[in-house]
Image (cartoon, rainbow, N blue to C red; front, side, top):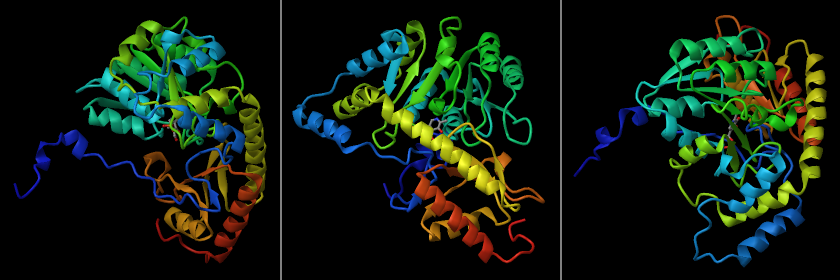
Length: 375
Ligand SMILES: Cc1ncc(COP(=O)(O)O)c(C=O)c1O
């Protein structure tokens, strides 16, 4: 065969763009993926190495990481059978897709929101019901989401709080209303839960068995490089979703390091305190610059726009070894007829944030005033 039979690949898949993040792991300030800027201390890392040395590499790991599931169950006060530990939230989203999505199945997705959900829904041929943001900060109104779920008779409604890329939250009462009123499942993505105070969504599961809660080790917990996340639900629901999941995805090393980290709550708490205080500092500094607009955020990142075209801004900042994220692919955050588009900036260490502010001042000072070129 001279040409590959590409037409045999499902059109829903061919129609997608592969997920790529053009980044630079060695940037002086890598502020483009909402990761923790702090690596784990060496003694914690050594536990991982020890575990790999002790393990039999010729043997499969457990089909599911039972020790980690037991430790999470213990800490969260949630039944073991109601927990799936996955190889990152991305993998869990695919599992949920396989379990619940399908041709024409209505899925409610507020936008802008972490783009993987929409891509997975489209690949399953699902009917994506978008919910527009309400107000200038791109937050969402719980009743708008609930109405969309009711009107479309949604199989699944996804809510992210705090939301990426906006940093906005949906108050707990709003989550409760959605959980109580939605006709189908409600997935609450709490990837940034460590940054907010108050009741968390897992407490809804007991009274609302349609609720699923997903959390990741990639953000405040600082393990983006290892790939671990978990899903909470009632044992009955989790048992069914489990059937759609590939076994053996969490290896022994990942499990050991996560267990070690769960015992070091001080590390995560210190990181969160530092990032919250730095987020305040950076936003206060930026408020002094009249040409810069920012949106306050409940998480470890924020949205910003400047008089510079977004692609230019990101490129010039990259030239100073500062990576920030162009989020104009989200339609609400794209440039409009008279406004620039937005960038998302993650909070780094104090030094990285200071370098970000200095580079931004320099890049903006170099830019001639006048009509923006991308409008
Ligand atoms: C809201 C949200 N959910 C999930 C993820 C992915 O997390 P993971 O690293 O666990 O795949 C991200 C990553 O940016 C996110 O912002």
